[in-house]
Image (cartoon, rainbow, N blue to C red; front, top):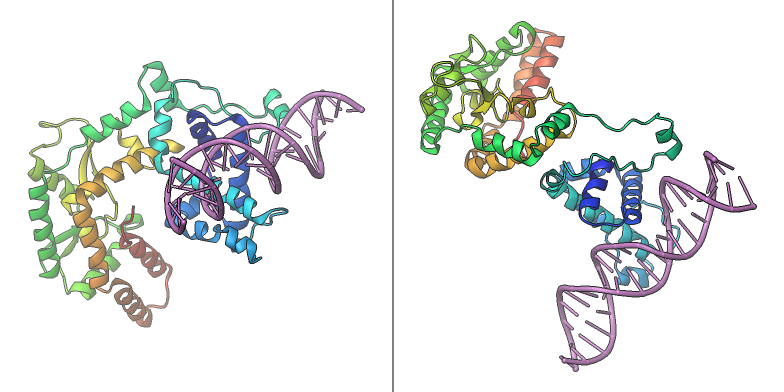
Length: 346
DNA sequence: AAACCACTTCAAATGACCAT
DNA sequence: ATGGTCATTTGAAGTGGTTT
């Protein structure tokens, strides 16, 4: 649970300081007994949790005990209603936080310190947060929102017709034993041989290749589809896989998974940046992409079912096991391939 | 012992919905 | 329209503990 940003968000929405404290306490109490709110949010936008937090006047009349396990030392109806409301507020915050606190990022750099002992702050045991990106934006008077918008607007996507054609062609190659590339897997690309072997088993395709530079195929694809050639007519853009999964034959070469990202924005798309930044930006970016490419994302998810991926994988793994006792390499491969073939979800 | 603080619980205000 | 019922929302009151 992200108390600090939740507090900022409530503040920017005009909530009273005491209300802010109350709602944070409420949410913390729910988290303590029912699990972290962020986890609930990621799982199902807290739907199952909210179900348990339902308690009507009728329930009260009939003396039904609450469906949640949070102790309430008082009126269950009222208490449950308060907690439910707090969770709903947190959901609201999670749903539009990336828009709301970008607006007033520059207004005040004052930390709202929640539930920290005042002495500790005075003694300097708790330092206010310092973030170089925030300092940078403040110095040059750029709002976070504008930076994000720059990133979204300047990211180059291939045209949708070309994406469509290329995707059909890619699937055809996969299913018809033609050449397809993947990125090398594991240290020194040792895991790649398992991938290549697995694709033989899965589609009878014997022509899956490890990309020689780990990025040659995507470079070429983006060049063909957009007309931009690196260091010839385009500079300081980075070829980037939106959904990763570069060892997955369906994903490494899929044009709908590849974009040109301005290098200045790249830190927000990757994992080297810490804190809320990449999370926020990725959320915005993903929303855009889900709108644009929902057709392909759905199709990809369906393919996972159609090829019966999980069943085939366990068949394949148990096959290797017969010859080759359960080695570390195989365990690594199994983990990796499951990630690479995971469903794409918002 | 007074002031302060975190946290929980409660009561009142509000508004949606429904039957009349 | 009117009144009743209910869920939701809000912040103040209450509680119990710590700090000054």
